[in-house]
Length: 381
Image 1 (cartoon, helix red, strand yellow):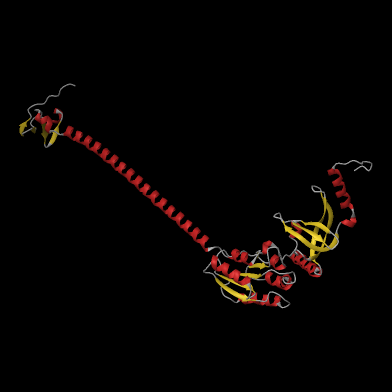
Image 2 (cartoon, rainbow, N blue to C red):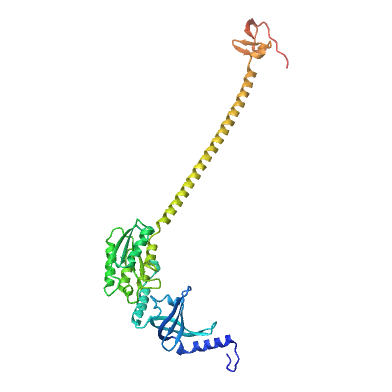
């Protein structure tokens, strides 16, 4: 913007202020401590809130991509340390803080440990989707690793029984909080490997603070899940909570109830699918039977037509033979006064066959006569 210009439009002035703020190194990648208020998670996944202390307030926003990088996020009233950049939102002319990272005040070491371990395990390939095992479609026996008390175990059991009543569930109790939680969880997973028929394991606990969920961010548990021979569903905390265990597990459920729904199909849906398949099979069989019957009817019609044609041809041939036989019947010319002559039982058709003195027989319609040849005479054609 030229330095000598003194008259601006609202948009020009706002963008100039935005440009100057974003060029100020003291206002970029800065960390600010304050208390969260007016926290709102938009349907887009962005997080909007106000950062305040006893002296001032600061409008702040964390975009979805940065939100997804956090295992858990503080709530209203919590004191946090955020890092980001000062900018301006031109449509309203408000300056705001674009937050990239957030941690509870005093929890910087834990959060940093989480980020470092996550980066290291990801580089080793522990989160690689290609190595994740598929869940069995119709499991008959599921193992559950969680605390034996509390709402989590009841939510999972109730959901599994409602959706898939014939499922066998084996609960392997474990501590899910505290310094001895990791060895307890690993041992509970190991016990399920000795249970014959277990096809799938759900690893679950309810929500909590970063400290409460920390056992599920430990490297020991992550490597136990990575080397586990059975598929593992992780259901740690609430929908917004992400732990190292979630990244290593074969599937991550947003809640324990969602894990139960992910693990088994609903029996009603299975029955509907089976009924639909049975109806389709019945329809196919009916079609096949009707088709075959139609083919039989067609073959029968064609066979009848062929037989009829053969019979008709045979009748024609018989009639022709009858005509020929009638033409060859000597009785008709005899009835008209004609005769025929035999010499030694053989028909005589030419006088040249005879000589004087031969004994011949003349056949009539009602008898015959013997005579002696006195002479013969042939006629010219």
